[in-house]
Image (cartoon, rainbow, N blue to C red; front, side, top):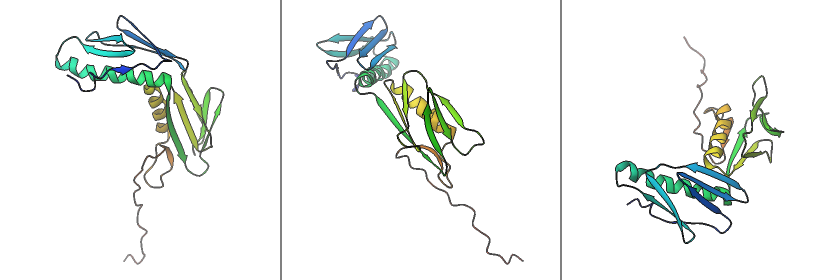
Length: 183
């Protein structure tokens, strides 16, 4: 049996979980998330816990068992605590700011980059060189922060660009200067 899948998930008091057919709905004061799960997996709510069970013991069922338990746990964590990804912008004159429903960034291009903020995501810029992405859906927070990073990924020579906080960028040595002489 899956070591992860067999662990029951404790439901916090402020969270309401409902299973309808092949859909699970998780709701709290921060928001609500729903997910459709495979018919090879069954969810049952008992004694304030969610139990994830598989229908058969095939290889596919075993692999889905732990996956769906982790996904349900991520949904519960999302509606209680939420998820946060922090990005830092490195480069002279590089900055970002939120205006309305757009993240506006000056990244050394000939134009300003406008990134539309999707529903369910909050973006803050505590400093002009720092971007904080918040939301209740773990996958959406990761996707949005990766899309922002992909606008100007960190380059290996000077290290400028957009990177996750704590991300290490290995720097390369540039071309060595010629010492003269030559003939």
